[in-house]
Length: 260
Image 1 (cartoon, helix red, strand yellow):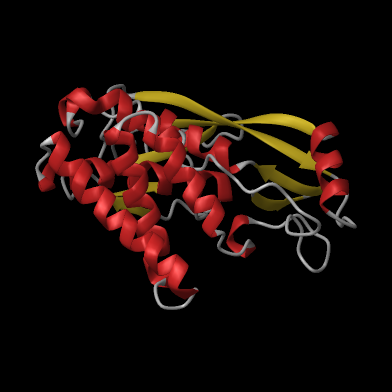
Image 2: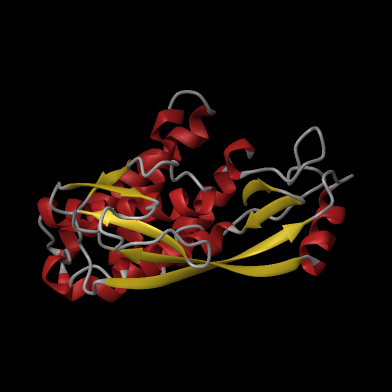
């Protein structure tokens, strides 16, 4: 999960919900700039489902040693989960399989040589899968790299929003390079010099520049479960709290920078 503090406890966003938010962002990418347009639906599917196959909680792997809900950054690598993610992608076709396998490689190649021969063999399998899929689909490397760049871009912006990483005082934060190599950034705007853009709390205004989308502004959202209990004895207690916790929708208004 993505876990952040709020004034009365924890705000919890499931990984799958974050992935859906990433797909909602990518879906607004301008049609003229979309990489490999013939595979657009499959690209969105890969983005929306890249966090499927999550490990079930067993005992206390869903909480920290202090009993707090464990954010995904503190959950140890699971070879079984990585295998499930790739295996599930395969059944939707080689394009989603390729993008998902490449994402797994991007995440876990730094573990090569550190988690045993079985993990290294799995990483080797991903390289072979990616090359076989690309050759079979007859996709140029440049086109394939552009599609994955959009995948990473949407994933990163979704994480920025879910983690509440937007800086104060209208300072910009880099997102990631887009499919054509352009570097994008975002900020949470206040009142523009000419009064064009007013800071809001619901929805939360987010400026992206340069502007890559098909509309001047649009809204995206994610569901957040709010917990008032700060510590839990085990996964079962946390799971119960999540089932009955208050679910709210967090909404962002993605918009162009105001002209000054």
